[in-house]
Amino acid sequence: MSLAGQSESVNAQFSAAEVGDFLALLKPRVMSLVVFTAFVGLILAPVPMHPVMAFTALLCIAVGAGASGALNMWYDADIDARMQRTSARPIPAGRVLPGEALGFGLLLAGFSVVILSLLVNLVAGALLAFTIFFYVVVYTMWLKRSTPQNIVIGGAAGAFPPMIGWAAATGGVSLESVMLFLIIFFWTPPHFWALSLYRADDYARAGIPMLPVVCGERETRRQILLYTLILVPLGVAPWFLGFTGPVYGAVAIVTGALMLALAIRLLSDRSDRAAKHLFAFSILYLFLLFAFLLIDRVVGAHLGFLG
Amino acid sequence: MSVMSEPQDQTGIVLTEEQKRRRRARSVAIAVSLGILAVLFYLVTLVKGPGVLQRPL
Image (spheres, rainbow over the protein chains, first blue to last red):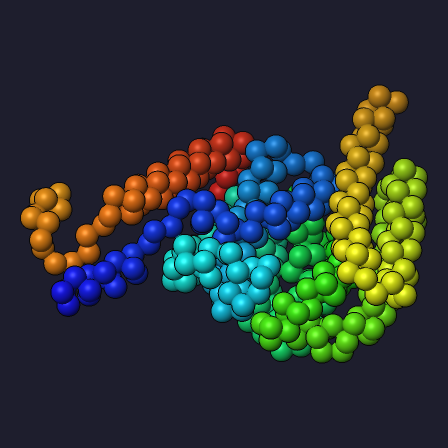
């Protein structure tokens, strides 16, 4: 009996993970936004890229982002288990062993950085390595559990992908790519704090010092508005500085005004609904900005070609 | 293989059918990934030609 019991406990340590569980570790929804913004950075760059090289760069960026997600889930398994939103993730649900997620994440991080560096260029590879380091070590291990500024500083990790895409095409960094970085960087706090307003209980239970938990909802609403006030002019800046055309400018002004209106309404409207509206619209806002940067460039190139 | 075909009452880890199926699925996924990697290197080598080894900063 004791032998059977022992064998059972050893067996419990043997992986029962489906392939899909490993794919879930890659945070596919975050990855899709990363790939999209990296793609826009790559297309906006003034140097055309061979399709095979562009595909290679995007694949490496996608895998690097996935590796960050897996390492984040490995480190955060304890708090993920305590939060409703994340309790069904592969590790807290018991479908993937922590060690498997760690090995998987490290392997993918190493491969994505080395292959991007060798096949595309070293600047892009170095930026990808720094992004993974920033998300896993600076954000996940250090800031997330220690300060309400966690997502403000940690948001830099999510803002790097268009710079990596740009660097993959040009081999460098420039004002335009820094501007793409700044748009996402200042977009992250209003986006995440809107979510944290109606998930504050969840974060409090997990002991994560999100702004509404530490400084209260009123301060959070004020901070959301302040960051939106910086974000909206930044969204218009690519047109203002002449990098893109008037169609982008119009979209940036109209959607920016809507962002601002929702942030202002949030000051007086204390309902979860208002926060959810801002959260949902912030995703659409960022998507539209980048989509129209892309459309502007592609249509502009065609008109230039025809004319 | 010879070790695997020892009598079942041997102590140690005995995988259930489900665990074997999942392990096989994971192995196939790893094989597919390696295949994609090989094709990727092949295509990049074709695109870059002799310049494949030149990586200026």
